[in-house]
Amino acid sequence: MTPALITYWVITILLFGALFALARNFKMRLWARVLIGLGLGGAMGFAFGGGVEGCADGVACVPASSKFIGDAFIRLVRMLIVPLIASTLVAGVIAMGDPKRLGSLGGRAFALYLGTTLIAVTLGLIAGSIIQPGRGISIETVTNETVTDVQAMLQIAESSPTIANRLLNVIPENPISAFASGDILAIIFFSIMLGVGILLTRDNSSVLGSFVSSLADAMLKLTVIIMELAPFGVYSLMAWVLGTQGLAVLDNLLLLALALYVTCFVHAIITYGSLIRFVAGLPVVRFFGGMVDAMAVAYSTSTSAGTLPVTIANVTKNLGVSKSVAGSILPLGATINMDGAAIYLGLVALFAAQAFGVELVFSDYILIAFTVVLASIGSAGIPSGSLFLAILVLQVLGISDEQALLVVALIFPFNRLLDMMRTVLNITGDAAVAVTVAKFEGEIDEETFRAKSVV
Figure 1 (cartoon, rainbow, N blue to C red):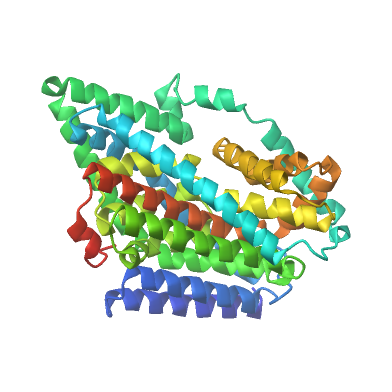
Figure 2 (figure 1 turned 45 degrees about the horizontal axis):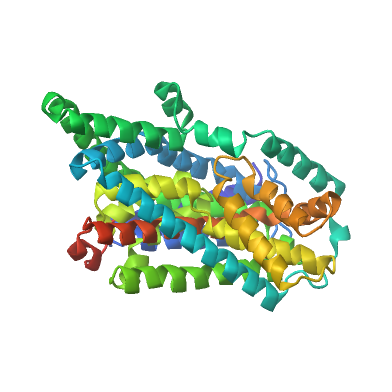
């Protein structure tokens, strides 16, 4: 063990002890501890990972040595996804008392998801036109190794099932296989069908219905317990991200990152804030305050599906949304709500056009928006989906495959830092739609929403 590694772990253990003391002795709220963990992890990664330059992700990289703690936390959260979705969704359908209400829930949710995605890509195009992140960018800085890595990932994406097949796969041939593989859409479909079946034969299935409802309550309790480990998990993940990537990757792409972060922030405040304040008639500050835990986890893990248990816990416990709405709307949002990707793809399209000197007219902007909305909704389940879709959107503008590949390869090294913000926006949008639909359906406890957060 090197002196740097020993020092890193001594400081890390002391910081973990301090985070534990904040929870045990000072009763500090979880969201505050999570934010502290993010800040401390970022600082440690920057300090021990080579600063601006970063370091290779391996034994030689000191912050990478604690990544297993973050990985363990992500596994614990992912462990909850399937049983939590299935139990809360089945219990929610039973609690509705009428299967016809499913159509109302799904229709409103899909319309809101589509509407927010349209607004998102529009904001992305506006930001890209104002900030112009592609002006003066040198594409020649891309290395052959990076291009090769991107090509390999794109081959995986292109081999994925077609949109028609993905829609067909929503109906599982074998529910057990769907549960084992974590196929979210197939799990949602089967859970809804099971809930309807129990609802229609309630007199003969009361024991099963009670069991599922109790299981849903138990899974939510377990989520709260595991979330107590979030400060330690996000600390380790942020130390790894800043340690291995540093800030040097932002030298040529600072404007693109700035445009994405600012646009995501504006979209969250204006679009989601308007939904909560003017459509649902609820206080905006309380909404964002109730989602801080989920936002912090989403930022550090970069996965909407992995954050889903935390999102469900925040939406039900802090925002007062019923389990029936949260259990159905949020999993759906985690698979089809791509506001973050919509903003990203719009910005990348303008970034590439500006870098290659392609002059765009109004019809090009319309074409970009239309392509991004359709492609982002259809990208659920595609490995490296955003990379694949970026190529598709650039082709629409007449940019050659070779040029599009160079643009994606240029962005690829710091895609993680962009993905972190996109994920935060996605899960915030999921929650905003769930709250709005719950308000329409009378499935929200406003006293809980307006009260102090409990998780």
